[in-house]
Length: 219
Image (cartoon, rainbow, N blue to C red; front, side):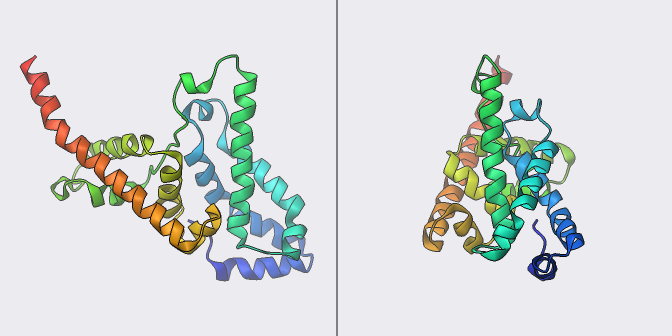
């Protein structure tokens, strides 16, 4: 998802030397990954009113303003630094929107990201759902996506976030740990716990599905 480090390091070095064009290129190559990150974490009710691209622009403007500060002390990889800025803007967007509306967005829909809406969704679901349900048709793909989204919706916030980090952003465990402020061992344990719970939720849904269909036919 994020640009490879060999692509980013020369841009950071040129930006450190004060080359404005390098700064623009550095931010540009991170725009699409930021867009996907933010889009995956917006409450669907908020996403219907606020364009994720606007939040991306705000994040990039702040990153541009604070870039020299980062370059003086790059305590973490650049994309993780951007993630921290983006997370703050996502929280602020939800807070502002709630304050602007007289009713809570939570009454419309829980704050659940529009999660893994890409090919990795099917690969992830395939790890947990009956292997005979390999997505051989678009209808089965849609059903797998629906069941996966429903299962992730029911995960708690910590479990959802580690699944998104590992499967949507494709971060390694070490980077996910840094993004979450955890030790690598703790991040690994959290991921294993989230995967176990996700698998249990999907298998439970699969077990109950034929029963639901039988009940419908009896009616």
